[in-house]
Each structure stands twice: as structure tokens, then as C-alpha cells.
Amino acid sequence: MFYNIIKNFFLKKNVTKKLATHNALASNEKLVTVGVLVDESYFSQTQQLLDKIVSQGIDASNISLLVYKDKIKKKEEINEPFLTLKDVSISGEITKEVVNDFIKTPFDLLINYYDVNKSSLLMLSIKSKAKFKVGFDTVDKRVNHFIIKSLVENFDEFVLELFKYLKILNKI
Image (cartoon, rainbow, N blue to C red; front, side, top):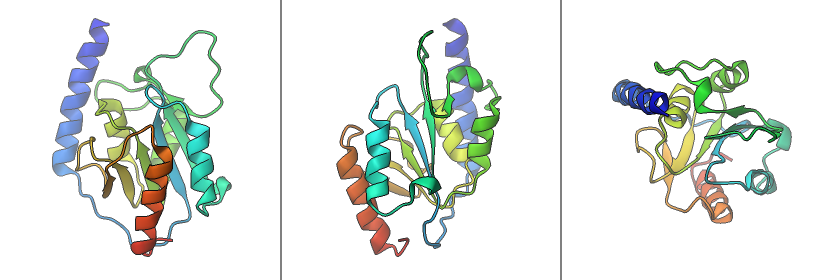
């Protein structure tokens, strides 16, 4: 427990340093690939969220998912790629190859589906090579290109608002 407190402290310090030099240039390209970063500590309806995104016209094969969990129970079985605090070092380096592949993928859209400032999630969002990032208004404003004011539980509202504005921005 004490180690996690120290780890979070240094991660937060690294995130703040990276955000100070973070260049948030957005792309004007059309959306084809979508990455979804979900914090399942607070939101457990990940499949319904993905189904809602697919219903908006995005091909399911072009959607990649990465799940963050605070704790994994001993007998819990997770089918999708996941990340825990154990997979992130104090300096912000990620030890899991699946997560590194997710970060290096140049998604046309990255949906940061979490509303709590967790240093490990912010670090992933900052390091991501995504061209356009979308998230909630409760997260640091420098991480995302586009911010939607909504609650995490209202994924229907979030997706509808997101795609409404993506159409206005000629991204779809």
C-alpha cells in the first residue's frame, strides 16, 4: 500500500512534467480506427459502450479496447487487454507489450472513457500516438482535444454527443 502511494506520487509528478511539454495538435482526417481506453474501476458496461460505438457506423474490427483495473481478483478472468498499476513503473514506463502496442498505434480517434484523474491513465493518454483524443471534462483539459460534459454512467449520451460533434467537424 505504501509503495502504491509513492508510485502514484512520482507518476503524478511525471504526468505533470509531460503535460507541460505536451503538444496537442489534432488531425483533420476522417475516422477509421478507434481506440477506447476504459477505467473499469468505475464503469463496467464496456461491451455496451462498444456496441453503441459500432451502431454509429464504426466497424467493430477497427475498434481496439484497453481496460484499466485498480485490482484484479484472483479468480477473475479478463478477455480484453488490460492494465493495472503494477504494469506501470514509477517513471511511467509500461512493462506490458499489449499496452505498448496500443500506445504506439496511430488511432484516428482515442476515446478516454474515464472521469477520474489517475496518473497511470493520464500517462497512457499522453503517450498515445492517436491523432484526435476525446474525453470527459473532469479530466485534465490538456490531455484531450475534445471534451464532453457528461457522466460515465451515461454512455448513450456520451456516444451520441461525440458523434454529433464528429459529424460537425467532418471527421465522419
